[in-house]
Length: 286
Image (cartoon, rainbow, N blue to C red; front, side, top):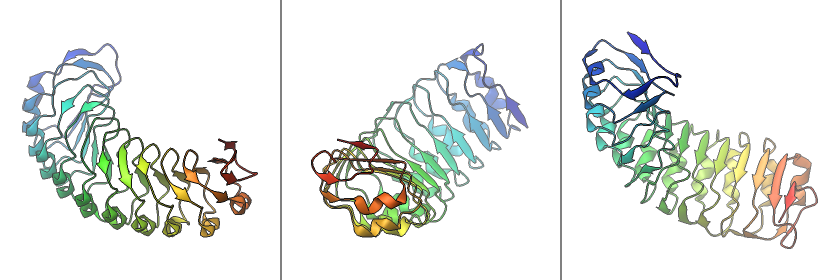
């Protein structure tokens, strides 16, 4: 059974707790309205629910732990609200969950629970635009071949990038920019042979850009490393990135020439080519 009351600015007020008694519901769409108040704990009774969309509203409060009872749930969209607090560890009990989105709530905080990795069929994990702290859990590697997209940008994550992320062999998008990450870029990310987007700008990453990233050369289209503390030169083997359309390495301490990348015809290539980097084909120089 499906109930779709979405994309209507005239729908406001609180979500009726009585919806929790509609136990035959398999799909509930309440997204992009002007709903206020909290997410009803009664939603934990909807044990047949497969698709739950309540994103893009004005909801407040915390994510109810009761949602962890929805073991049939496939897609859960909670983002673009004003939710606060932590992600309940009970979300890991949703063994059928493939999409979990809590993006752009801004006041969700605490650490990313390692229990999320128990939902081993996860396809999209969307946690960007919040206030999560702590490290990126190495346990996320348990997603193995299921995870396609991992969005962690715009939080307050710290520590190093786990080398275990290189085990996510089917990952196509990894965005970890605008955090407080330190250390070097793991060479294991070169194992992500179908990766299309890798963005890690505006962190505090150090060391050189590893030549091992060329392992993604058949697929990588976007590589954004600007505004870090990276040094050294660009590996010559990067000439293999023939699908690359966006390459940002500006505001680092990278030196040397990247003229060898000019034949690739990269549409957007930014570098510190006023003083540090030799590049006559860059879109912008800093």
